[in-house]
Image 1 (cartoon, rainbow over the protein chains, first blue to last red):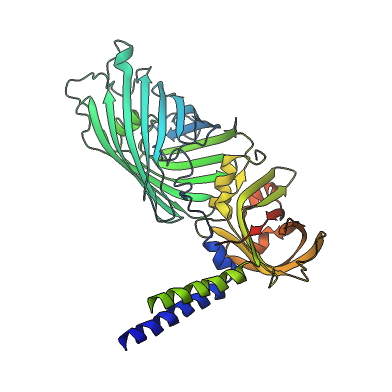
Image 2: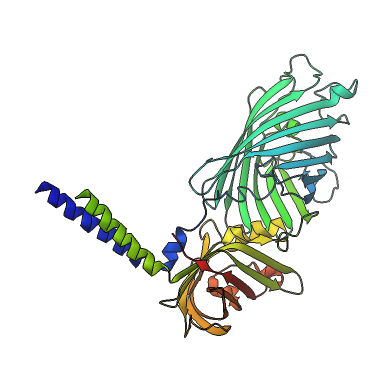
Length: 306
Length: 182
C-alpha cells in the first residue's frame, strides 16, 4: 500500500516536472544556455587614482594616460600679489597599460623635484556573479628619487649621494565594489626611505589608506581618501593626508577636483611628510586639480578580428 | 515498480524530445550597433548572443550580455557599461516575439516582420523588425537591421556629450541556428 502511494507521488512529480519544462518560454530556456564564463566587476574606480592615492584600477592594454596634477594653496599672512593662489605644485606624468593587468607609470613633481615611477599589477579581480573573489587586489610598487632640497621644509633624507635620495613604496590595494554606486578601498602601505637626516626618524614607515567613491550620476562621483600613518617622523610634526573631491569623467578626459591638506604627489612624500593638517586656514587648505587624458594606442581592432 | 517508473520517465523524456525538434538555437549570434556622428563614430559587436526559434509556434527569443560587446577603444567599453547602459543593474538585453507569416517549409529566402518586446536598460518597448530568413541545410539563418532611439530606453547622455552620440542607433544582427538538442 505504502509502495503504491510512493509510486503515484513519483508519477505526479514526474508529470509536474515535465509540464513545467514544456511551459517555460523560450527566454527562460535561453537563460540556462549562458556559458559559465566568469563575470568580472567593471570599474571599481574610474581612474588610476581615487583622489591623491592610487586606486585598484589598472589601465587596459595599449592605453596611454597623460596626466597633469596640480595643487594650489596660500602662504599664511602673505602680503604677496600672486594671482588666485600664492603657491602651486604640479606633477606631469604618464601611465601605460603593458597588459590588461600590468600598468607602468612615471612622473615628475615640481615642488620637491621627485621623479617617481611605478608598476601596478592586478592580481585578483572581483567577480559580480556571486562566485569567486569578493574583492579586487592590486600590488603597487614605486621608486622615487628626490632631486631637490625643499627650502621651506626641513630635509628628511640626506642628499650625499644618489642612493640617499631614493625611497620605495609598496602597497596592497584591496577594493570592493559594494553597489554600482559605492566602492571602497583599503590600502596597507609600506614605505622605505633609503636615508634619514635625523637618527630619530624611522626609515621604514607603515600606513593604512582608506578611500571610497560614491557615484552621483553616470559621469560624476564623490571621492574621499585618508592615509593613517602608524609610525610618523619624529623630527618634524606631520599630519595624515586627507582628500575630499569630485571626479568628473567626459569621454577621453577625466577631471579630478579636490580639497586636501597635502602639497605632494609621490606616495612617500604625501603619506609621510605632509606638514599641515586639513582645515580651512591659509597654507593648510589646498585645492587640487588633476587632468587625465586617455589615448588609445596599439589596441588591435577587436571588432573585425574574427 | 521501480522499473515502471524509469519506463514512464523515459517515455516522458522521449515525448519531450519530440516537441524540441521544432526548436533551433544559436549561441554565437552576432549583434552589432553603430552610432555615427560628425564628432565620433562608435561601433560595437557582440559575438555571443543567444537566440532560439520555435518553428511550430513561429516564436523567437534573443538574449545577450551587455558587457560582451567589444569596442574599438577599451574606455568606450567601460563607459558603455558603467555610464550609459548600467550593466551592473541591467546586465542583459532581451527580445521576445513572433515571426509573422513565417513558413518553415519555404526554401527560398523570405522577408518577414518580427513583432515583439525589446528590453534594453530595463525598459521594454514593442518593436517591429524586418528580417530575412534563409534556409540552409534544414536550418535557418536570420539577418536584418533596425534602429532604436536612445531616448526610448531612458539612457542618459549628459548635454556636453550629446554631439558625440547619435540619437538613433542602428543595430545589425545575424543568427545562424542549429537544431536544439538538450
